[in-house]
Length: 111
Ligand SMILES: [Zn+2]
Figure 1 (cartoon, helix red, strand yellow):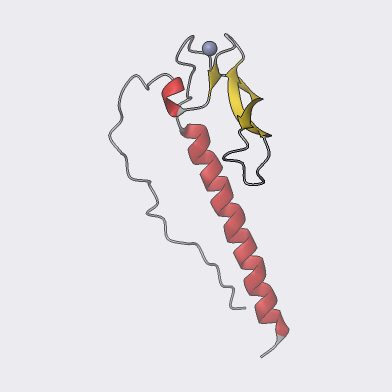
Figure 2 (cartoon, rainbow, N blue to C red; figure 1 turned 180 degrees about the horizontal axis):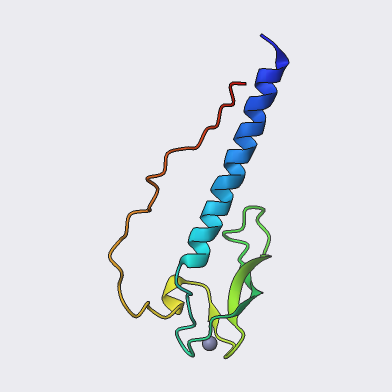
């Protein structure tokens, strides 16, 4: 047993994680844009709603405020905090199975 094997494994895992992240990113970028149900806008900004939590239900027994992050349409100002606030996709796509028939590429150089 030497430490190098472990080190290699850790490196490989990090590489696989990076690959998975890149793959996930590709899938996200290939997905259709969600658009505002009101105007069809596709760009949003982060905004906060602030909820007042009454003393009756607050964990510390005092009235408190809780910021809740939500999205606001840049085009029309509509706030979207639920998937129903977004426009439905034009064509309901049949659930396509993720294409991942490729076997994990593990290169071993036996030199
Ligand atoms: Zn909008």
